Structure formats: structure tokens, C-alpha cells
View 1 (cartoon, rainbow, N blue to C red):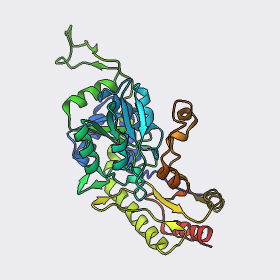
View 2 (cartoon, rainbow, N blue to C red):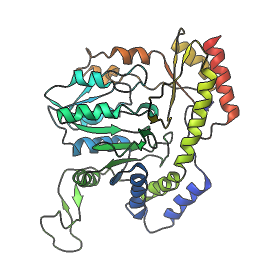
View 3 (tube, rainbow, N blue to C red):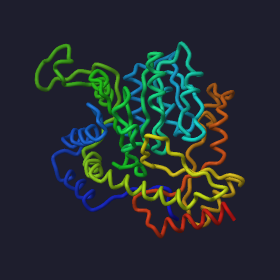
View 4 (cartoon, one colour):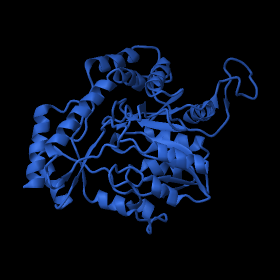
Length: 374
């Protein structure tokens, strides 16, 4: 089975982890700051906070944005549930705006239609690494005094108008799950240019506890610390961050490989009447975490099953979030985003990862054409 995604772990990555295992620090040591700096410098942000995973990052970002009961946050339905679950964690209400039929990202025009006096933030998701229309989103946010939290789980290394995703909004979160642009096993990162938000995020990550004497109400000695807020244990380990530091050195190579693979797919499927290849918005450069096609004039379930039977590990990204039973049971039965539902009924993700060989890709192309076109 050729999987839709897979990590790339090499000997230097393994050695980086071994070195930490032999060191004095396994968690909350010097590798945390090193990894944070590597990511912040790469994306052009002032601050970065390493955190246990991207779901925790989104939770922390909503907390720092002071999302609470009665607040609404607009996001996309075509995403993993964490993009909206984080709003629930803080007592807020997710509101789903429909997607653009070309990019599959949140549609700024529908964001405008979904804004109410209770709207406090927007969480755009850069699906598959394709950047959202951030100029339009920032314009809406400025007009209505809204916070923008970018869910860039797929988009480390993606570019919008010549700038890396990560330095553009109030906060941006990344994922380091094994199939993402780089991996730390599990792990996430929040970047921001706001010192105020940065301090909130650091507190939230570690029980709300600080040893920073400038923040404490009193100081009884070198051992002293205080809990200033109700936080969580969302810390990463030095083991994970060592792997992350090693992986960051290869990120540009990983991205180049993904883009080469995508160009080959696009060329191979260009004249297929039943396949719609992914759209690339002008002035953007996707990181291509996913390669999502639409299957037209065929039953998607049948195509999916036949591809799996032939050894092609396809997947679907994603089921509209509001269709999940939890959401249906909590007030979303009447929610419909027509474009998202139409797109969902046709989409399939094909294998794309740096170690996908030319021979494997040829097999994917051949089988997809046979199943979808013939």
C-alpha cells in the first residue's frame, strides 16, 4: 500500500534524539528554545511557543484571545474537527462559513455574511497548504475588530504574496504530526508578533505557572514560583524538539520534493475529463501537505474502494465538521454549507510525501487513470 502521507526520518534525525537521551534534559530543556527560534526565524515571527500538538496550540490561542461564553468564532467546515473544537473548549460557539469552490478554503464573502455582534475571531485554515485569501480576511477583521488565528497545520513553508505563513496574523498554529511538512512525532507551535499574547501562551502551556519575578506578586527565594492563571500541561519535550530542530534543516528540501511531485500529477491529469486537479491561487506557493483531486462523473465511494484495493492509500480530507454526531447533537442540525458539501462529495487525497519515488508515483497515476477514466 502506498500511503497518502509518510514521515521522512533519517540517521541524523535519530542521532539528534539519541544525543538528547544522553543529555541532562529530556523535557523543558535547551532544545525547546532552539526549536522555537528555528521556527520563528523561518516564518518571520517575533515569538514562538512550542506546545504538545496543534490542537493544544489552537486551544491556547483561543484562550489567549479571551474567547469565552457568548463569543462566536468563524471557521471553515472542511477541516479537522480541532479547528472548531478549540472554540468549544473555551466556551465559545463555532460558526461555519462556506468555502471557495476553487481553493476549498474559507470564503471571505461568506465570512462577511456570518458576522454578528457576537463574533470575536476568525480561524482560517490553510487546507492542504494552500494559503487562504489573507488580505480579504484581514480587511474583514480590521473592519469588525476581530482576532485572526491561522490554523496552519498543513502550511509550514507555504507562502502568501512572498511572505511565509506565520508572520501575518495575531497568532498562527502549526502541527508536527508525522504526515505534516516536518515531524516531531506529535507536537505543535504557536507563533505571534505580540509580546502580550506570547506571555499568555507561555503561561497557558505550563499550568499557568511562572518563575518570572517581573510577573509574580512576591518572591520568597530562588525556589519560588506562582500560578497566575489556570493553565494546562501542554509542554513539548526536548526529545521532540531535538527531532524538530533536525527536521527544520530539511524543510525546504521536503517542500521542493512535494512541489515536484505535485507538478508531475498536474501534468499527468491535465487532460482527464473526470479529474479536477487542485487550484493554486495567484501570488501563493502551497506547501502541498495534501494533493486533493475531485472525481467527477463517477461514484466517489466506488473509486475510493477500488483505489485502496489496488494498493493506493487514498484518503478524504475532510468530512464537513458540522456533520459529525457531536455537532449534530449540539445545535448544528440546520447548518448547511452548500459548496463544502458539494466539494466533499467528490474529493480524494492522493499520496504525496518527500520519499514518494517516481516508480510509486507512476503507479498511482496509472491506477487512478484506470479507475477514474476508463
